Length: 272
Ligand SMILES: [Zn+2]
Image (cartoon, rainbow, N blue to C red; front, side):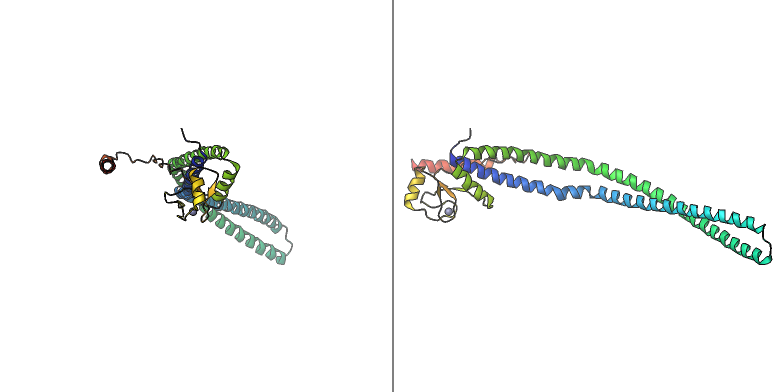
């Protein structure tokens, strides 16, 4: 059961806000990571998109060329008919010249169309190949992407839980304490509550606190703030920090801790 004194709540809020700020920063770190993981798939998808656009443009050009050749063939057919109806040499020469021009132009169009169709064919192969590569890259990045997204949503959930706990704690505070806490937190300060040291100094800035105020703090009367740095002062000792559950697998630290126990034990025996 967590203690529910005002100072206890303020300190827990302080701890929660630090933890939440850490989590927010870790959540932000996912953006570049996700972008980096997805990059190969995005690059190939982009290439595929550009190649597809080029291919469509080529097909449009080929159709336009076909229509132009059709028009010219119709024109050639008319000229051929006119050739049979000419009445003099001048007219015959004129029709013949134009027909030759139209036929040369049709030939050029056909040549161009053939080249274009060959390009279309090659580009169809390229588009197909890029599609396969993009699909493969997308399939390859997916597991890592999902893993990262899963980790991130885990952090989102932790943040939501902490945020709910924060609301509860704020609700347990008096209006004045809440205002002081929120204005401190809002201005980006991490420390809101500090313990009064044994020799009567602020535990945050170590400025000396007037004797009268020291006494009131020790008797837990009212809300007192350090005149120098503004933190809320309390006589309650700092709680032991929660051990973070980040013990690496397989670690064995039984050696180091027993040594300090021995020192404390021998000091205790001297005192008594
Ligand atoms: Zn201070």
